[in-house]
Amino acid sequence: MTRQNERKAEFLNLPNILTCLRICAIPLVILLLIPPVSPVAYNCAFLLCLFALITDYLDGILARRHNRVTSTGKLLDPLADKLLVSAVFIMLIPLGRIPAWMTFMVVSREIIITGLRSLAASHGLIINASRLGKNKMVSQSIAMLLLLLSIPGVEEKLVILGQIFVGISIILGYWSAVRYFMNFYRETRR
Image (tube, rainbow, N blue to C red; front, side):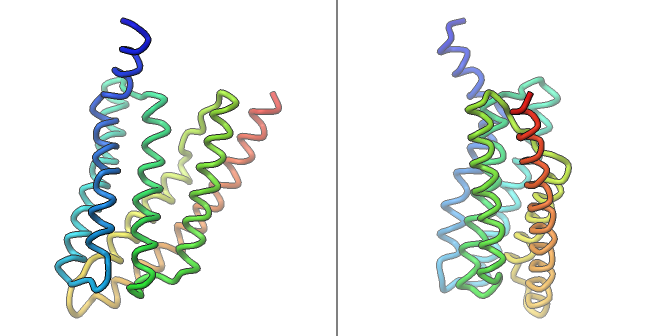
């Protein structure tokens, strides 16, 4: 197999295709969240995000179970997560579902960690997601779904609960960021 075919095979496996589907869902979610947003649009965005989160779960299982963990997947998967969460949280600011400062904290952390991952890659290192980072993503996912769900009578409570989960994700996110930087520093000093 030629080097070009090897790269193509590494990219074109089912886990990476699922990750690309997740990335393709992002513009659709953005379109649904352009104000004014109807309850139907909120719930369609909720379903698209739920689909994206299920593909995130499945791509990880498939990659590990079928020995399809690739460098491409290790870079694309967290990037897809960051793009989805950032896009949704940014779109929810003018809709009054999330304060701008919370979105700023989330997006800033994601940009910083993406920069760190790029820097690490330039040193030949790949920063794998830590347990804290995975818990942060779970908190963000729950928050995103709660903030998008439109159920008359309980919508305000869902938004408050969603904001609480955003707060939890901010704490976990910055805690994991410190640990990523410490690990990177340790690895580059070897």
